[in-house]
Length: 114
Image 1: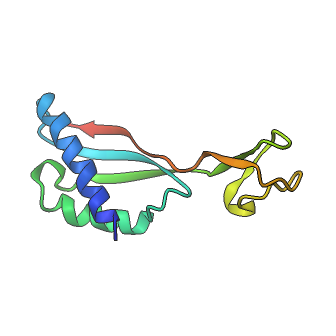
Image 2: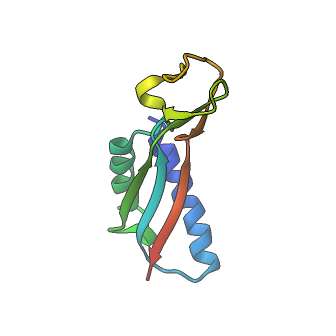
């Protein structure tokens, strides 16, 4: 489960930001998570709760996850379509000359601090 490593990475980064800004408590962290990012939100939430209970800065903090839909662009017809529903083959023209525009993101969007 790589979600635990991801959780530690986020918390380590935010601990540094908090120290630089004299923050003593983080109440809420909002992430943007792409639909095909390979991070599984329920596992991430579980790891967050476990890790937050062990780090004073995050004690009782809330993790909010905003899912960004996966969107693919077709170079053949220059249209976009939902990636999860259609995969690599464009539903408009049948081309396989496509690439992911959005949906693989993993961003810290905002934090709410004391």
